[in-house]
Length: 138
Image 1 (cartoon, rainbow, N blue to C red):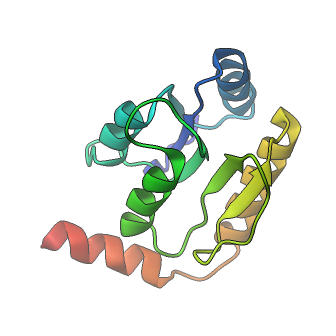
Image 2 (cartoon, rainbow, N blue to C red; image 1 turned 90 degrees about the vertical axis):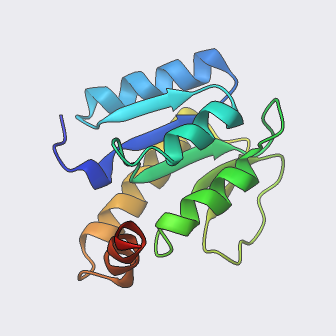
């Protein structure tokens, strides 16, 4: 399993079959993965500094008060240089650089995550790391 805490992936999806299969596929590809079925649980996981989240996939519509858009905003507070993958009813542009997929398949989510992680791995150390360190120091 990945030992880099910044590589932990949070999967937020209220469809249990989709969520569990995606988690299974990611773990089989040697990723550290945690999952939530709702926004409130995922929000708490994003705020848990003991188990930091490095990547986020979420559905836009989620049951409860916290939806995928709120989760994306919370994620960007810590990871300003990283995109979120959001499954939405329609694909659309994102000012934050997120990847908005219209009702994606499991394979499409896997490919989007791979693409983001590879792109991030090939970049020099960015402001993303510096901003996280400044927030923890505050």
